[in-house]
Image (cartoon, rainbow, N blue to C red; front, side, top):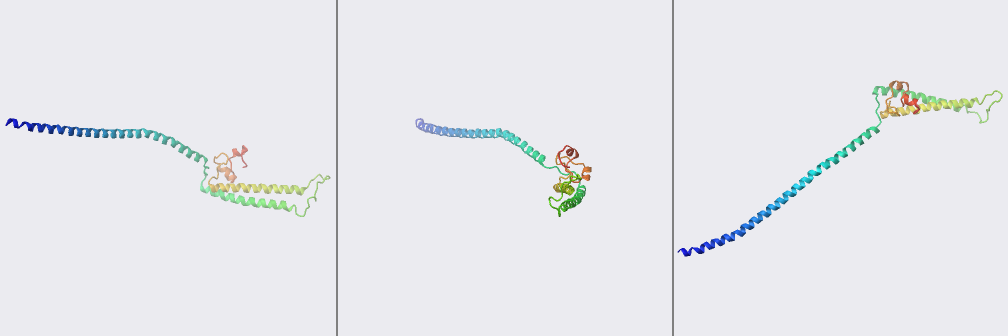
Length: 208
């Protein structure tokens, strides 16, 4: 009976030998899977490191662009004309004075021009000549030149008043057109169309 049990032990040994290759294959599959997972993890870490390394560079680039925007804003502010430092009440009074003075100077300019033209009525170019005996020249011509000069001066005042009214509309009335500084109120009350400060006018940069 003891000799009959030996074949059974051989069959068990064969089954165990057959199971070993399957176990090796499973182990090799697990090892390959773990290697692939390790490679993916390493790749992700490398990508994350690159992204974090690029962030400071992007921040630096943004920081460099920011000052350019600030300088552009400053340049715009410098180029903008300064606003009038005076209140609405003073500006309204000055506008009324300017309009009154404009009407007065316009009448004067027309009156002097009409008088100059009237001196030529009924005269021929060679009617009056220099008088050697009395030493007097053509008095009518001299009077006409004077009338025309007065008319031109009045018209120039009208032009300056119109410019002052434009500055009121633009909100820059009372600002010196040469220096950009405020014109003193006393000067504007004396000459409502003044476009410059006294020191600028004295230096010969402007008209009034």
